[in-house]
Structure formats: C-alpha cells, structure tokens
Length: 480
Ligand SMILES: Cc1cc2nc3c(=O)[nH]c(=O)nc-3n(C[C@H](O)[C@H](O)[C@H](O)COP(=O)(O)OP(=O)(O)OC[C@H]3O[C@@H](n4cnc5c(N)ncnc54)[C@H](O)[C@@H]3O)c2cc1C
Image (cartoon, rainbow, N blue to C red):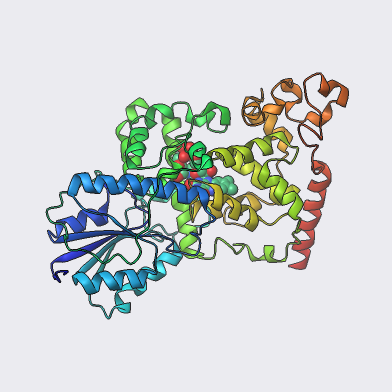
C-alpha cells in the first residue's frame, strides 16, 4: 500500500541530465521534503524514435544518472515513456506532492507544457521553474528600443556588460527521499547500447555528466590556439562540449565560470573567441524565444517563395556522403560515424545542400536533428537559417561557398578528407579537393576509379551557383 503524504516534492528532469550546478534540484533539496525524481521520454514532437543518435545518448546518460542517484541518495530515478499528464497525475494521486521543481528548457513546445502544468491539475501543486541552462533568460538582453536583438555582435556586447556568473552549485544534500512505491505506468527499459552501430558511434564520445566534467577540467588547455585553429577540422582544437551542453550534462554557467577561473592560463584571443561561441548559443535561444517556429519557418519570410527543388536522389547522396565533393562527403560521413560534425563542415555541407543542390534547409536541419548528438532546438535551426540566408544576422544568400576552395583553405593537405574517405587516401594533396580535375588514367595511378571507387560530382559548382543566384533574384523580384 502506498503512503499518501503532503511532505514530498517532485523534481522533473528534462534537458538537465546532471546533478552539479542544477538550480531546480538544489531548490528541491532545500525544502527538506521527500524528493521524487522522474524523467519522461519523448516529451515533444521532435523527440521521435528516428533520432537514433539522440536516443542513444540520452539512454546512456540516463543510465549513468540513475546509477548515481542510487549511489548518492538511494533514490530510484523513475523513467517514463507515457503521456506527461498521465504520469504526473498518477504520481500526484499517489504521493500528493506539494511542488514540482523544473529547469526551464526554453524549447517553445516544453514551455507550453510548463505554462499549463499547474492549471491542468487545478493548481493542486506549485510549479517552481529555474533558468539553469542559459547565461541569460531570453529577452533579458534587449536593445535600446526594448526589442530583441537580431544582430549578434551588439547582443553579445550588451550581454557581456551584464554578465554575472554564479559560483557553480555543488551536489546537493538530499536528506529525505520518497520511499513509497511510485506507480510505474510503464517503466522504460534503459538498455545499454547493444547494436553494432551504437557501439561504434559511442567510440567517439562518452555520454553522461561524469565524462562531461572530466572534459571540462581540461577545456582551458584544449582550446589553446582556438582563435587561430578553430576552423581547421583536423586540428581538433574546439572543446567538443556541445553534446554535453545540449543535454544539460554541464551548465553553461559552470563552463564559463571554469574558463574564467583559468583566464590567466588562456590567451585573451582564445578566451574571447571561445566565450563568444557560448554567446552564439545565447543568441540562438534569444531568436527561438521570439520566433518559436524557427525549426520550420523562414525568419525572413520572403524566402517562403523560394523555388526549392525536390530531388530525393541528390538528397540521399548528400546524406550518405556520396556527392563527389570530398570535403562535403567527409563531413557527412563524420556525422554518420560519430554523431558530431565540426562547425566549419556544418557550414560547408549546409551551404552545399541549400545553394548547390537547391534543397530547402528544412530537410537538412531535420537530418542533422536526427543524427547529431548535440542536436539542439535553438542552435541547429538557427545555424541552418544562418547558412541559408533566411535567418537573423544570417550569412547573405548570395555569398555562396565554393566547396573546393573551402576544402583547400581549411584542409589544405586533405588530412580530414583522408580520414573520412579512405578511398581517396593516396591522392596527392593538390587534387584531393577536386579529384575530377585529374584524368581517369592519372587517377588509376592513385588507386581511384571515379564513378566506381568514389562518385563523380553530382552537380557542377559554377552552374548550380549561377542557378542559385538567379533563383535568389527571382525571389527578390517576386517580393518587390
Ligand atoms: C548548420 C548548423 C547546424 C548546427 N547545429 C547545432 C546543433 O544542433 N547543436 C549545437 O550545439 N550546435 C550546432 N551548431 C553550432 C556549432 O556547429 C556547434 O555548436 C559546434 O560545432 C560544437 O562543437 P564544439 O562543442 O567543439 O564547439 P566550440 O567551438 O568548442 O564552442 C563551444 C560551445 O559554444 C556553442 N557554439 C559554438 N558555435 C556555435 C554556433 N555557431 N551557434 C551556437 N552555438 C555555438 C556550442 O554550445 C559549443 O559547444 C550548428 C551550426 C551550423 C552551421
């Protein structure tokens, strides 16, 4: 028989898969009431079973978190895969908890759920929500006219002038846990990854708070040279903290705090450039908050008339890394193999899809969403709209990347390409960026038969570039 009490509170984990520097958990612990901890899977429409990478990450991370809750507090972390109102209603009926503690995710779909939560249950409990995932709440940083910033540089300048970091919170002391038998509607089995694919993809990252904290310890060293090298994928000079930030295994407050603490060991250029990237994340959330349809609608609405192509064959080749443009294919293969892609590559492959293949950014963003470990509801869609030229402060549409020049510039010796496209590994650096510039006979000397071992380019850069510019002009004329 379960015991109904009025001295329990519920801490509901969402995009905050951590115990350290966790405001909602900290505040829940301060109540000294009995704590119930839950996680509900598939909270929003964007979390589907197609998201293999995301699901693999979350399952692994939850598994570790659940073990730590047990070890630290003897709390059984309950994981549900059911309708949220059913879950919360059932737990409330059983325990009569007085309060829910949550960290706001700033995902507009989740915000809607949060806003309705208390009233759905006739205000029979209080919802306490905290900002534990951003440096600033969206709309905290506004321009002089009280409007949100559409341009990054003044946004970040103003944000920095108001920045006040918190000393990161330690692991809270939890004195009392709810020992009743919380009704489990259908407990999700958190199974360790067993498929070959899952094992392979996890060779590159270890999900979970403990691993995140380990990486953070050395981040100030890892980003030495960041301002010069961050655009060169093979240099591996970026933090690779994005999956941990996206799933809330680390708080941005703690990352910034830790970098600031080590400021005297970091060159000022590296410090400024790295923290500015954290600023882009803040900026993306600022956009998302003011434009909740960011994942599907063009921020600049004239792009609604853009004559996109529907070419499933080319889209498939892009997804598989078989476009015949080595730098694009290397990026797409890195994504598939590791659940991650370097930022420079994200820009190159996105530009190629949108401006050379003329396929709408919405499809590319969905593919990224389904395959990135760091899939982030603000950064992903703001990133795509930025590349496509239809977002705020976006790279103008008419600035079209030449993939071959990008490749020569950011992977001069082709080391990154050789890593992900082993069939091209013997090509001389001069030709690895554009193997089609060699004759078939020359290529054979380097063990490559174009069209057999590696595809011929699926489009011509110059022709598709001209077509893109024409389309852009047409769109502008339509909107005049
Ligand atoms: C088309 C496209 C899609 C993207 N999708 C995502 C995504 O789903 N999730 C995601 O976290 N980032 C996304 N980004 C931004 C960026 O590519 C990644 O954050 C970065 O590559 C992560 O690597 P890192 O942790 O080593 O970054 P670092 O260079 O070490 O930067 C530190 C942190 O700053 C933030 N950051 C860095 N660059 C950006 C940026 N341009 N915009 C916003 N935040 C940034 C990230 O949280 C990152 O972890 C996307 C960019 C583009 C162009």
